[in-house]
Image (cartoon, rainbow, N blue to C red):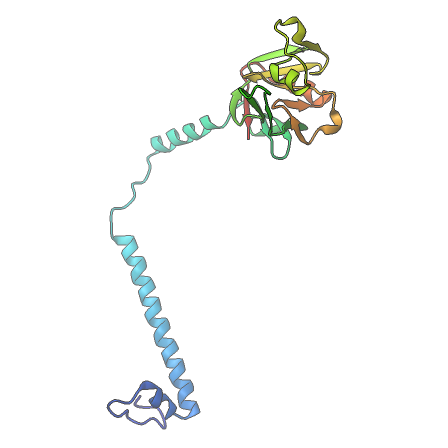
Length: 227
């Protein structure tokens, strides 16, 4: 530590701690400043060197061509539905009628409860959950009738009828229904007070005015995205 006032040349075998203890307070301050400066200089050099190595070592990533960029944009655009489509958020119980990226209408809905019903015979069970995924509007009905499935009778403790005549029920699905496959529909409801809750057997219940707007705007083939 030559050049510092009050510093003594360290004897062989002396620890750095003893050398520092031998310094006066002003010398200690100068020593600390020098050590900090040295550390920062070394750290900066290491950082710059590291950046230099990262910039020069290894193969460089190829810059995408205009054709590759155009193909990528086209692929990404293909994943996002264009035109009229329906997005359903079962967690928040919201339906969005969209045209491209623009939201035309937002509606409060009811979706699947997630409850389970078991057949007393023990051979079947049903999970009343709304399916998630990408679907399409397959059918559209005005003043639809409900063809009650087996579980509807079992849930009510009734005997399951053998013929179709005993399964038809009018007026419970509202004025409109849009089927998106596997017996699931976006339809109206008699229980508007329950909109916003997970209470259905898997279908999407919508209030009258919102349902009419969705029905009129959505053609057969329109995408239905459910999550």
